[in-house]
Amino acid sequence: MIGRLLDKLVFGAALILALQMPLLVDHYHQYLSGLYSATKWQVDGYEATAKAHQFADVNSMIDNHLKNAEPSVRTDAEQKRQTVELLQELTSGMDIFAHGNLLEKMIFMLHPDRVHVVKEVLQNFKVGIPLNASGLLFGVVLALLLNMLIMLPFRLMRSGRRAEQY
Image 1 (spheres, one colour):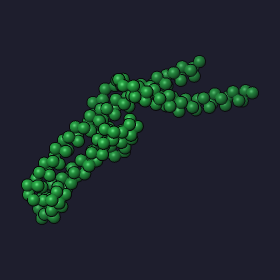
Image 2: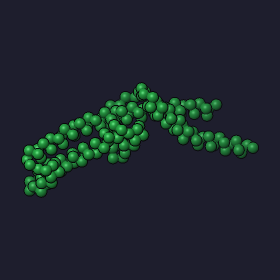
Image 3: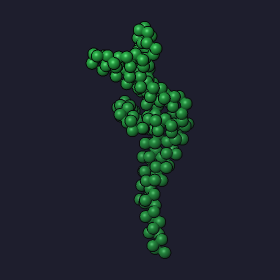
Image 4: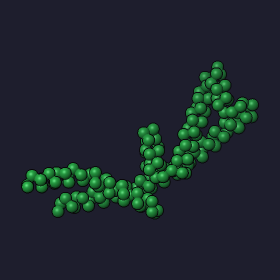
């Protein structure tokens, strides 16, 4: 009796948690899109500056500035290099969010290097229920898997007691 109740409570909690993942992925995508747009705008400005000053591309301009004797110019060039690299990473993320499935998006999002971004997204996250079939199906399947994993030790103990009785 108590085991069944515990099983239902665990499943309910797992279902609520699992249904949040598709919503969190959508929130992360919105955050990523905004960051991508702002970073692309900035790198486009770097490209325009490089072109206006007859550099082959942004990277050649940055390389030239890194050789400059003035420390502030070198620091600025290093910041520009980091921004260009960030744009490359964000571009790969945008490709995954444009063409990938929910699992691929979650793997990208939950990568250890991006945990700080997930924390920022969670600050504005509101609990809800996904309104699409794939999100609902994902939530139910994940909840069933979580429930089976969490309840497995209890089921093994119960089957062990039954075996001892016979």
